[in-house]
Image 1: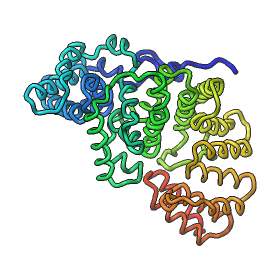
Image 2: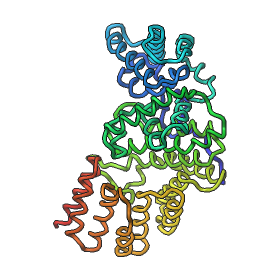
Image 3: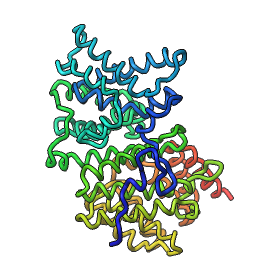
Image 4: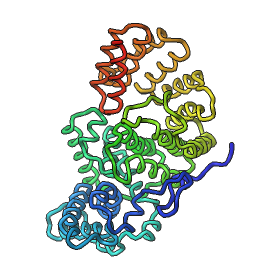
Length: 441
């Protein structure tokens, strides 16, 4: 099977360069950066600080208010007094003291254990304190709390995206195609339920970890997917994709015996390896089969293959292992081989059996096109019955392509128009507009 590489060869400890030439851009480096901006810390320390605050009380909204107050004080103080040597420790202490004061003044519903936050404030979030905890990163503990059986399954992943990665309700609502007000209400109800039930922010037993694993992996992948859908939105040192890869790596330490954990890490590595080839110099989208594979991160692809082998050695195929295998099948072009569409069709059929989705069905239509031709692919695509199909951009884009290949230009134009209307990515919209314009020639 070959030697399996450690995830730390992809995402290291923040100080030494990783084997793929990158440096670890995690929250571990922020306390060492005296001039780091408040905005950067706010965007990428939110989940880490929140998880620490919640280790002593179960009120997410109160902890969020405390962090908001801490950042507000930072905005007022740091420009004049200078950025603290350990900015996260400063923020944590201020937020902790605010929570304690709220408890003592009787303006909150916090548990009495909130008063113990002063002890954690003294720890000042040093790296030695972090490494002594059961979780490599306490955000993982918070992830598993958000996946508690008492929480509505439909809101578990959105709750994780907001609490762990600091995404606002509007960004999450856009990703889930629901109104922002509805998403906000769902998140508030979930946070209140955690508070009212006093769900402890502690490491669950192994059986509970396994039961909640699917939701946690879905949230980590969701963070990466949102970043993929919004290229260029996050221009700071640490992107959502970076954070997703980091958390996936930590999951392999927590649950190293779970095949799907390695499958997710493999999938993210494959996807990130191809990121340099996704857009042209003018930020126009480039389809996978037209990308210059020499631009891909070859070392990261090799690491992804190693993680996939590790997943395969641990158990039967799961959703993320199958999706990683699909990405592996596409990556053979690195070795001057042709993509085996028969293998891809088999993988998509397997994926549809264990994790059916509209996206997998559309991808299967593409493999049918490659193997059997346009008409068979159109027949299959038209046979898909799904209530989300009308607002699913990939379905319309694929329909438009197949119709144009079949010579049905007018219908293809209409399909492209619908796909463009549903597209949120400027680069992809530019690509689809060019394809539609070509039909006029």
